[in-house]
Image (cartoon, rainbow, N blue to C red; front, side, top):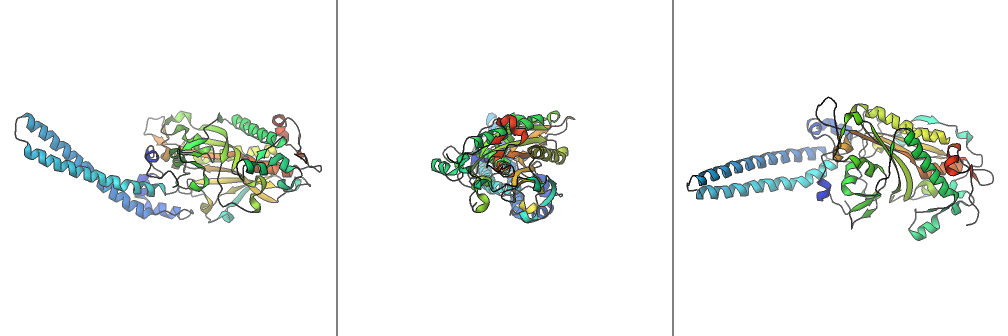
Length: 443
């Protein structure tokens, strides 16, 4: 697992679990059947067999410790009465050795037990369409008229002067491929989009965060990036940090190991951050220009909700993200992501894709996801019911609201004018400070 193995003490410090352990033990076959719908391989039978052995060893170790305590108490009592306790001391030493051996036997199983437990993905909700690849995703909603995009639309990377607004060559010189400079009106457009997205989130009840851009392995484990997406994240092994691939990680972990009151739910937060993704293996025409970057800006929407409302809250989250595209007047559609294309911690997921009028293709700009209690169990985020009953795990949800680069690509292409300038969507005029963006033909 890269530089931060699952055996690391920090990876165990706050881990409670993933799927409910009691449910997994009692409904193993049901879980196995559900997980066959996802693309991730895990051995439920091996885990349950190891779990049974571990429980048996724990029971024997606890019994040995109890017997050791009774023997120790008896030794103290006999010694206080003046009796000869030499034989008792010898027996006690043997019992102590045995108790330690049994405890060590449990610890020897713990690393593999935890590794197998962490390898079990979240179960897809029954409403998720069954499928194997992105070709099996289902379009469930469309908005906007594709024919009303600019008649002058061309791929954004072919717009005259584009390289003077988004300089990839100098970015590669300074850092590497996929780290461009945004210049002039292009930089202003990015800033305008961020301000618009955050303003709309505030109007929808989300409290703004400005989170850390580096996270530790425990945080990445809690949200399900580890062990799953090691190859996607940039690592800082000396300090044992990861650069955030999404604000989901630091924001979700804000409440790690904490207890919320039921009356506070749902809790809504939003955050703008740069996002850093290695995107290993991504090549070809589909990743030109703004289509796929190693560093990009995104506004993230995060919710902690009551379990009974998580499906309803997912629909509201999706509505919040869709509202941004409607106000920007960008045609889009919504995909119900099939079981085989869904992420490791996801239970249900929608993707929003915008129409790129120049490239004549759909570009993903948001994923709105329900993780049920999967992340909350790993992060130990619970709530106290108002009726005084036992603590429960919250359900966590998040969605992009929105990712900047492909939204920007759609704006550039769909609003391209004959003279090479770009009409700025009306809702951005106040943030941008004008109605038209221009990219000079020379630097």
